[in-house]
Length: 273
Image 1 (cartoon, rainbow, N blue to C red):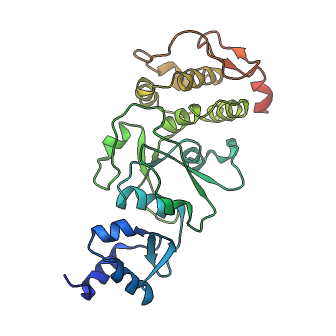
Image 2: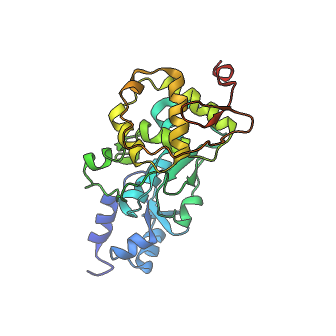
Image 3: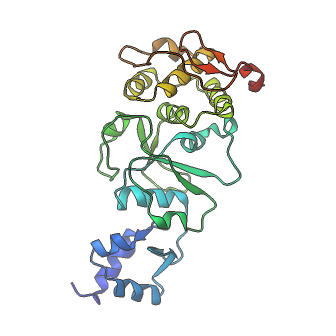
């Protein structure tokens, strides 16, 4: 197909929504040469919000469109998880979010360089693989919903209508947050979150706990969950959940939990207000 064939431009425009991006790598792989892309930019069909990535003129750069591009076009196994997934689910009131929102992404793949250079109020934080031993999933649109749910993941649509963003369910996100570097402030945050999490699904939590390789995350989660006496706690199946041995010091001067042998702050009730 010739570079001058208008069908190539039409096809590209059909593929690009208002928040979609395409990388130079993706364009080359789909038969769009550098000279042709430069021609599209010069003619006003495409704009480049950062070096190495393009979108249709008049499009909007939004974090949701970036993540969808990373998952569906770049085929990166990165999902929204941890703190930001919980905020997106509606737990902002219980989270200590900074002034600039940080989209926490989990997965083995690395973020492309252009993702950090986009004109966004949010920034992206690549948190690594996370605390689970599940096999790596690609997040192309044809991945079955059940395959995602089996790993504590789901597709979510934002208020602007950006569809199909893969993110952690609350059950997975809270365990990802429990695996973050231990600080007293983090423990207070997780405790406040768990107080509000009365509707977690015990069957899903049981599977996630069995596949979680972080002893610290599991002990912290269970120790704090026990404080709030939610009904789902009685239905957790902890057989096969490895909790390790010995004591774990999480915060200096903390109180040792008698069951889960991990130190937690002794003033948690005061911080709940």
